[in-house]
Image 1 (cartoon, rainbow, N blue to C red):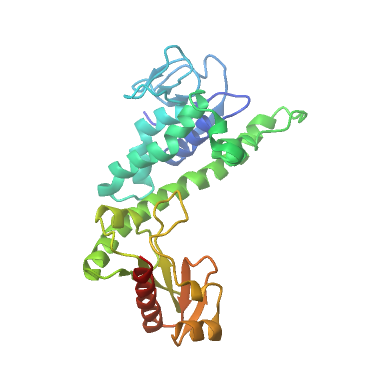
Image 2 (cartoon, rainbow, N blue to C red):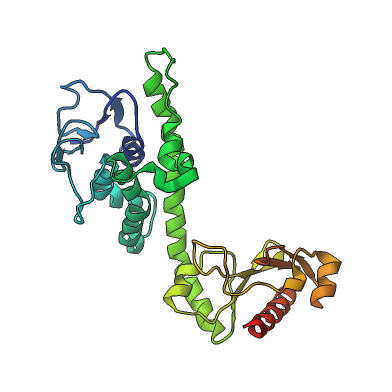
Length: 308
């Protein structure tokens, strides 16, 4: 039987059922989204998917709640929220609907679960404190989505439902953007691997366009590569490589003498005709031609090797 109803609880909302709704409304766009605690409405049926309400988890019966005791746990005993349960059961179908290539689905499903779904599960179950984000806690996705709830003195009888429906496309944009980014990184791997092979022992990696390269670089253990060049519009860029995603520190900085210079001043300092810009923090430079950016890259490598 076709799914004609997607049922979650009424009243205030949280990130877990909102994000679950993102997944389910894409897979079942013709189904009616209902927010209710009415006993008959939240009773399982073949035409319903019920989530974050109902007091049970039974994938065959299409009910995905986590508030009962004991609640459903992952293999490592970390708790599920409704989002984790929905993602575990419907996430692969969702990725297919997002046109993720079949060969990438398992890896992206696992990565999205680890990076996006699990934190929602832990926060919703109180297994992680929002304070772990420090002064940025108010800017976490659950907090931002929660800020879309109606204010306390909104007397409208439909305030909660109206706010939920307003928040849904916003939540969707975050989920879909993350999936697109993961899919793009997967597409980039082969291109970067080929570029690394072409670079050989050179400290300069040339890419055909700007793209995610760090994971392929780490996988190849290409620690000798210090800088990346690629075209950007009509210009070319030269960039440093961060030691990790948690720091701004790089394997090598661009020459100190170039810092903050542009156009004629940078040409004079570098000796490269076509040099256009170097950031004051020395992590990116721009030139007007491929020849100019490769010349700058060679000079940067020489300077870095002197310093080391």
